[in-house]
Image 1 (cartoon, one colour):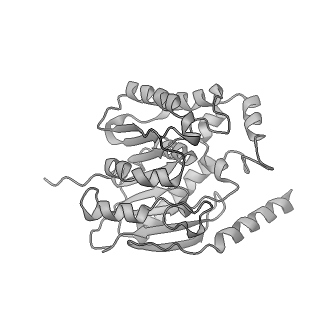
Image 2 (cartoon, one colour):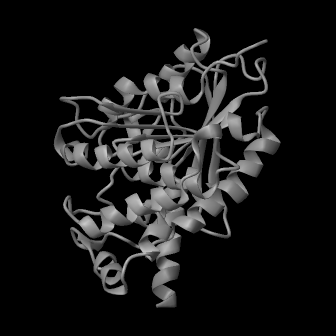
Image 3 (cartoon, helix red, strand yellow):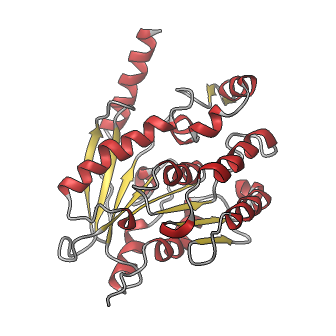
Length: 309
């Protein structure tokens, strides 16, 4: 078993190390190659800096999951991207958001589901349900390559990546200037990050949030665990903002009733229009093309311009 784990780690290191730095049409990228961690395997991290950096310091920071999908489609698995550099650059240039940088943390397959599935809701499930989920197969592989490891992934972000960014870049390290965002499973882990670290993250963007958690659209036990977690652990709305959305096609067709239940529970916690935005985009699917087309909306909600007295 130890030899198998060593081989897996070496293969992960090799896949991380050979990736090219993405090309951007606005701003610039600084690559942190195979950023080491004592909690999870190394991850590539691409840090996007807007044009003129660091003249507008201190910058807010947006941490984004699935970092290899953000800037350059030439090396992505589906040849799609978020166009995050173009969208962010335009918003900053026109004053529709405060100046910010993007910290794009790559996922490390096959452990993406392990790192993005919220751990405390998983731990609340009956043991037989946990075992069932951990045995889930996707093709010839198990869905959870390392079990559920999202608490360690968040320790990596909060305890290792963020201190590095705060020390090496001209940023505001405070909660109001720190946001986190992702789509699908990345939406789940963004919600979870805000709930687990409310003193670190002031805002979260959850696009096409994969409330089913696994490959079953109607697993009420898992969905209820997420809903109950929100009730018990999500912070009060006074100092936080959260954005949800979904489409209606492909995988997003699963989400409307689930997001409606989330919205109901969030409203019951006191989240109104000033602190929560939940939108539906009929006819849109589960893809980077769809998320890119509406990225400007959550960015403006989560990182609004600073109001000067």
